[in-house]
Structures are given as C-alpha cells and as structure tokens.
Image (cartoon, rainbow, N blue to C red):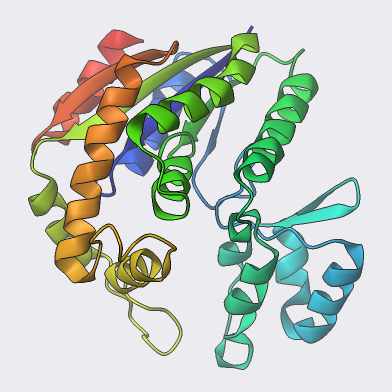
Length: 278
C-alpha cells in the first residue's frame, strides 16, 4: 500500500523544513522517497497551478514567448488540459503580468465546490493508479488541510460540521493508501506570524508583494473575508487562530492517522518527535 506523509500546520510552523528533514531521514534509512511542496508541479494538488486547455495554452505561450521555455519546464499535460506551476516561473518587468494572467485558469477560481473537490479527486485517483507498483514513499507538505480549508471558509463560509463532512468525503480516496499526518501546532500564533512577516519581505516590490500583503489582499477580496472580520493585519491573525481551531477539531473527527505536535520555539525537538512517531 502506498505510503504518504502529510506535513501540516499554519504558516511559520516549519512545514517545508520538516518535510525536507523527513526526506533526508528516510533517504539515510535507504527508503526511496519523493517530496512535494505547495506550489510545485504537484501530482495531487492544484494550489498555485493554472490549468489552461490546449487553445488557451497556445495563446499563453504566444503572449509570453520570452519565457516560453521556463513555462514549459513547469508544465505537464493530462488529457486536453495543461497544468502549470506558474509561480515557479521566473518573470521580469517585461512579463510581470504573467502571474495575474495565469490566475484566470486556476481551479481555485471556481465557485462550484463539487467541481473543486472532483478535480482534486481525479488527480488523486490518477496518482494512486500510476504509482501503485512503485516502492516510493511520498511527502506532501501543506496540501491537505490548508488550501481546502481556505476555500471552505473564505469562499463558501461553511461551518465546522460541513467542513468535517467535506474532508470525510475527500479522505475516502486515501483508503487505498497508508496515510500518516503530522500537524505542527503553533503554541503562540501571533508571535510566529509576526516573525514570518519580517522574514518574508520581498527585495523588489515592483515585481513581488510582501507575503503579508498578499495574505491580507486574499482575505479581504475573498467572498466572505470581510463578512467574517478578516480585515487588515488583525483580521489575518484572527483568521489563523480560527483556522487552527478548526484544523485541530477536524483531526479528532477524521478517520486518518494523525499526530499533533506542539511547537513553541524548539524546532529540533519537533523533528525528534516526528522521528519517534514514524
């Protein structure tokens, strides 16, 4: 049965670092593994992935011909649809509208929750079928809870019970896999977010916004962000507290093997706990 590890938690919880450490640990144990982070050209996730059809892809490549090779490096085709990890494409001032152009083809633009779920399930079923006979362990960071919960809250304003129902349906596909989830539980959410706000400053605001500016804009422009009070920096902090509470409750009510590991400041101890739990 296919082994999959999920690494989950709020921003700043060290998900990327822990997933890389886990990959190295498994490699040192001679366990073949592959690691995918959010925004990668991912086998099962659609965050930061644009999905144009063939005709739309031709137009995109013509419009951004100067970075055509970069685009194709971050692309794959399934059926009549291309999947592009567009935020991995390096842009310049001449192509700085590339990201905004790509957003129109995101699955995340849809208002149809059933379509949103079905597209992810299609990828999962294809992934399970294609990897059935290999012995690779997969490490997926950030793609199970965060991105789906963001949609369920901000675009659909679902309550906790409905979110649980959604994830129970979503996780049915995992019955064909050996799934284990590590949730990094930040003890001091405010402090952690404040730290990463300062760490994630861009060097060129003419090309890239600061991380927190993107986050606030995303919350405020979402369908229910303002209605739920997620406005400005304080609203962003409120959202992360609310999301954390939902995620912790969700893990207690899902039929999936999960471990909740508290994080204060000692990241090394967190990884030691992960190793002990493997």
